[in-house]
Structures are given as C-alpha cells and as structure tokens.
Image (cartoon, rainbow, N blue to C red; front, side, top):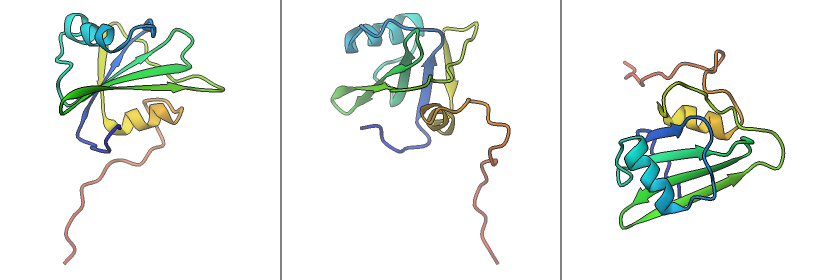
Length: 117
C-alpha cells in the first residue's frame, strides 16, 4: 500500500508513458531514463496519454508494489515539462490524485507546530 509518509520522495514522469509496461519496464525507465534508484523509498508515478490512468511504482522491503488508478470521468492535471522527471512533495501528490493542479494558489501554507507557553 502507499504509505502515508509525508517525507517520501515522489517523482512524476512528465509527458505520457506507455502503461502496458509492467514493474520491470517501469523500473528500467526509472533507472536508465531518470537516472534514479527504483529501490529507493520513493514513489514513481506514470500517466497515460489520455491522462485518465496512473501507475505508481513503489519498492517496499523485499518487493515492488504496482498501484493502478483509473478515473471513470475527468483527467489528471498532469505536468508537462522540459525534463523527463519532476520531484514533487507528498502534499502535491495527494492534490494530483484528488484531481487538483500541482500549484494551488489558494492552499494553506504548511506550518511547523510551535510550543505554546
């Protein structure tokens, strides 16, 4: 399962990916195209051309998880960039899954808790 660790790195494959690829094919993309370690404690997110399906590759302990998400209606707000991969925060990842843009102008800032005297 996708753990709720907010410090986890999330990498998005910009543009579209052929989602016929399985674990091994996506791990090769992570290693050779993005020059990242697929065995790291990160989430690697891929989107299809129609932007209605996602695959998320995650390594955990002794094996890979491959998560698949298909929207029945609507599209993901998928980034287009000049780079192959973009690193986003876990918070932005949750926005993406909820159908929101990665850049929320009206979202509250993240605040650090302070002690109360």
